[in-house]
Image (cartoon, rainbow, N blue to C red):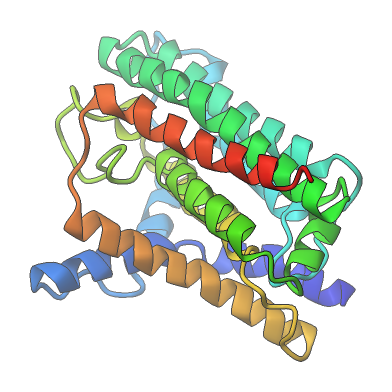
Length: 300
């Protein structure tokens, strides 16, 4: 059981680069194209991590620290997030609060690195990122608090272990819908942001990393894939996988749920358009309302 718990972070680090490729292939399927090869994410990372960086004289150590700290924060998040109903490698009371703070710390350094360049475009993207975080972070905390109250536990591992064997369908639907919106928003996917756009005036995440290159951009790309996995694990944990035999089978099913979420993301991006920036806060408030309703459902 403990070995399977440590296999999850290893599996996440190894398979996370597949998630953006899977989303792109689903979108290509809807558009009648072939899409990128399955190993494209690994080839891009290998190419970027082998290059030397070039830095502006106006930047400081904050610019260089941003990608590394973001990547390190996501590695820490993987240690406290369970998968497939299995216990996480690091579990203690209040670890779900640590998860929110670790994700917030990574966001802070990413925004700080963007502001450190002195670019007006990157400052604009950083401003939008912080504005939307005002809505996503409380919604995430409320959703996790609803799970904590429902299971009467303060640690993610026993929370998701109990969810894996339970059948609280209304709570799962409400939090599943709320977490899915947060998943799209936190990872800057359509309808909140378009990761494939080249218009600086409409970008959020991509505009913040315009001046990063080589190994720094490689860590940014890898960190973005890990964030897809971490938030996907929170959503996939709502699936009742605890009835499956064996810890490795449940771990594989949890990874399959994360991959299925990536397929769903590709479908959503293929059939919907990006909403206006003024509408994004309304969408995020809707996610907060869903999570709040889930919390109220646990108060009996």
